[in-house]
Image (cartoon, rainbow, N blue to C red; front, side):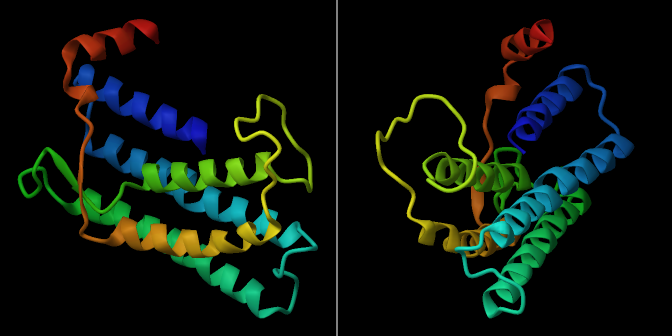
Length: 182
């Protein structure tokens, strides 16, 4: 999901810099966003949380049903957000803001929060690197809040909350730097 955030950003910058945009490309990009930021985070959360025996997401439990609902709400929120973005013409929307948080941002936030919790978890496989918070350990109960975070982020994706767009891609020098680096 994190790599998909980076490649989605580079893809958009390159398409605009090369003036290689099309309706087909926009639909294909939305389909990729649906898989990368809709299906993949929901699948990650569901498979990880249900595989942990010390979490309440075991078969035939109410918590598992709520997790399934949270995953479905996440995927539907991403679909709705992408569909609304695709049918809104450029003339209808100001160029400096988004309405609702982008699926890329929501998927990236969820993945980063999950990785942060997992890095400091004492259960399951760990990954190396420096631990900025020292010996702090993620309480297992924090993993039970992930479905709530999913529902909140799904709501923010479909909301009309105005969010400023980053202006990095509008700089031609920056676009040339990105193209030359690729």
